[in-house]
Amino acid sequence: MFIGIDDTDSERGLCTTYLAAVLMERLRPLGQMASLPKLIRLNPCARYKTRGNAAIAIELVSDRTEEVRATALEAVLELSDFSGMNTNPGLVIAPRQTPQMTAFYQRAVTQILEIKEAKRLLDKEGIWYRGFKKGRGLIGALAAIGAALPDYTYELIAYRERARWGTQRRIDAASVWEADALTYPSTWDTVDHHNSRVVFAPHSADPVLFGIRGSDPLAILEALQIIKSEPIERSVLYQTNQGTDAHILEGVVADVRDSESYRLHGLVAESPQAIAGGHLFFLLQNGTSQINCAAFEPTKNFRDTVKQLISGDELEVYGSVQDGTLNLEKINILHLADDVEMSAPFCPQCQKRMESAGKGQGYRCRRCKTHADDRVRRLLARKLETGYYEVPPCARRHLSKPLVRMSKEKTHCSR
Image 1 (cartoon, rainbow, N blue to C red):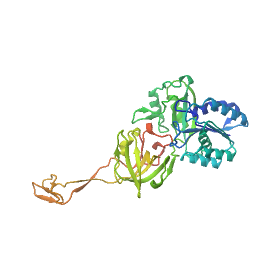
Image 2: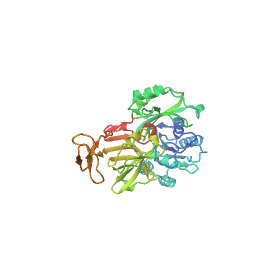
Image 3: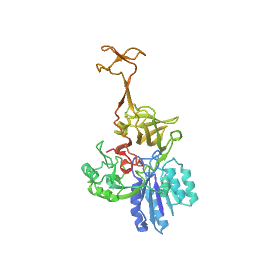
Image 4: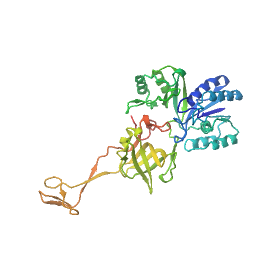
């Protein structure tokens, strides 16, 4: 059977992955885990998400269906923050994964779905479920069960002892940097080199101590052994759709919709402009259609790349559309336009720059009495190269594929 859980935490605390970790321990006497639990990130534009919009799916082999349902229900009631205004837990237990459920997942990771759509499919398939309060968690719980992952990564999440929840986390930073040095690129987004930050631990009051992401479970376990921290209550290795770009749709500028994420092709229509707060914006044009693209201040050094774009550069942009603006996650520079400077010509005799002879009268050198009709065209060097550029780890969304995973492409990794 497949157990899906979502929307049990709040901004104040608790965590759906922690609930799942406790539940898996309680289910051991009732059956056998058939695979690694799945940590499924859904549409990052979802309005009511808390932090990473994660749902969990557990695959269990058991013939004790009623006991499994009762155990899962008890865990949800015990470890959900029902006081949270936007906490609306959902629990789904299905006997199988169907093509209809997989299609539902694919929509849930790219679109905004309604609760009634989840209930309609659950009822049609005859699946056991329980929704609490508004029951919005049924969307994620059903999607997590239906998730088919042609591309996947792993994350090991370590959890804190309950007595330490809400207190400052004790993690030895030097050991984290050492773990990164020894296991990168099989692990990533543990630290942010350019911004000199440890980024794998949250700052909220939830039970998570830290999470180690990577492509190789052995490298992840090696990193865990190196990192020194406060005592770990428990840890779980999840298979996940993080770092896969599962949320990205192939699109064209004319057809984008809010709350969806795209890869779009076009030309830079005008050089990026900065506004108060350090945010950068530029227009991407495809045919007669344009969209505003933004590199917001939290993307830090990524803005240094965006700032160098000029009109005519050919790009692919990746990101989510909100209020008609695409929030950049990475860009692929396909072709760099010539950066041309027009200036007064030099005198062919004294080699000094000429001055204007008057409007429409060309240029002259007073000393040598020489004359030229037009300005000269000078090609300026571009510091940019073609290829992919990404936001740094401190600004990366869970689903966004890091360039370290794109070995077949020309990339400029953030470290």
